[in-house]
Image (cartoon, rainbow, N blue to C red; front, side, top):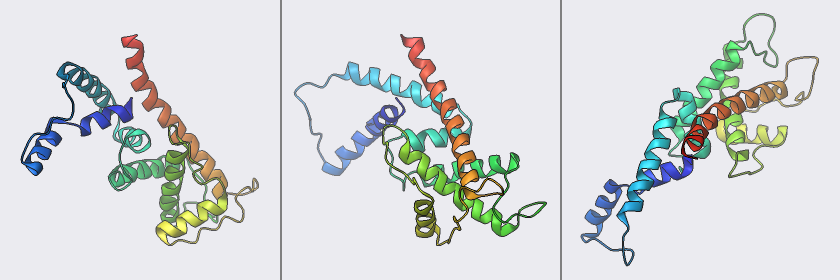
Length: 197
């Protein structure tokens, strides 16, 4: 529903007007244009978009990032909103970072965590339906992605260690947070289906 709603928004009256301006003429794409259905689809799309945009900012951004018909370049601002919210949630939850001594993490460790949140979001969006891509299934893939995107050599040697803080445990906690946020988004939109049915 989210994908279709934002896709319908892309086929807007303004986009049509821009096409007419570009071509200099109106091109009829079918034998008969059924404006009634276009209006109905527009109203439905508007309801879904209104529901998404009534959510807190980080949930709106997550909905568009995971389910919208946009390119990653178009979603850069949304990705940043979700990454910052995830970073703040992890800190509020008292996350322990690899190499962190007693007390607060260092500024360098916090910078690594912020970049790490980008990898978590990328993975989550890739494995989310309808894409169902592999994402970053291994610590080496996470390490490579972080290096490619940010030029950071992430140490993933102790990914699965249970006796001390590891990036594996931060990864798992981060994905749990994103899963719960995604559930909030989808429940909000799926409530519309039960109202229509």
